[in-house]
Length: 210
Ligand code: PMT
Image 1 (tube, rainbow, N blue to C red):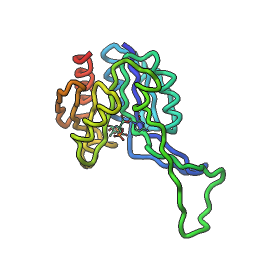
Image 2 (spheres, rainbow, N blue to C red):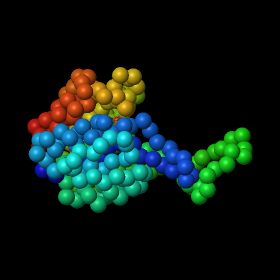
Image 3 (tube, rainbow, N blue to C red):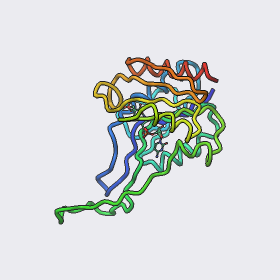
Image 4 (cartoon, helix red, strand yellow):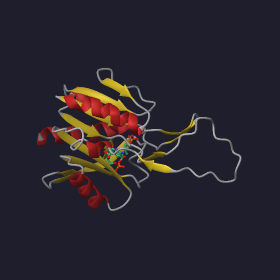
């Protein structure tokens, strides 16, 4: 089968040398790509800027911003059977990117932010994707309710939720702990483990649900 996997953060430019981003390292998404390849699947990895070596056998598209990731997913999802959205996409971008480096002339600087396109939220409606859709949810509160709501609203078959308020898992850690929410109401806990092991269990859950 053909997997499309998004990974890593996005960078939203402020001026030629500054950007808005987050702490995603890409480890979780890259572990999913590695795992899918070792199960014999084809993988197209769409990745934000990270310092990891991409898996050799994956087709890789490197992007920077949320809008670049949106365009890459829109183009590549047509041929995918399974799409996994693990990237930590910035929800906002700077409305007007400065052409020159911003000078520190004033005591305050106000940046106006506007929403980025919702890539996962566009897959069923705008991209007409009818394959198996996996979203992630990075939550700091009300994990159960927020995850169940995201699963439904974005038309996912599976939602993988992690509690990113914890200091031992999630963003930039080697380990994670996740809860799976399936569209038919089933739930599954995957206890804390290395991201490679978590990825293998998520992929096994997907295969079992196909
Ligand atoms: O990269 P690591 O350091 O290994 O960390 C892994 C992780 C914590 C980033 C990963 O496990 C994770 O939780 N990824 C999703 C992060 C996130 O942005 O979650 P969210 O709840 O804000 O977004 C919900 C879903 O919508 C996600 O599937 C996200 O990819 C997607 N999204 C979000 C915003 C947007 N504009 N477009 C999107 O497609």
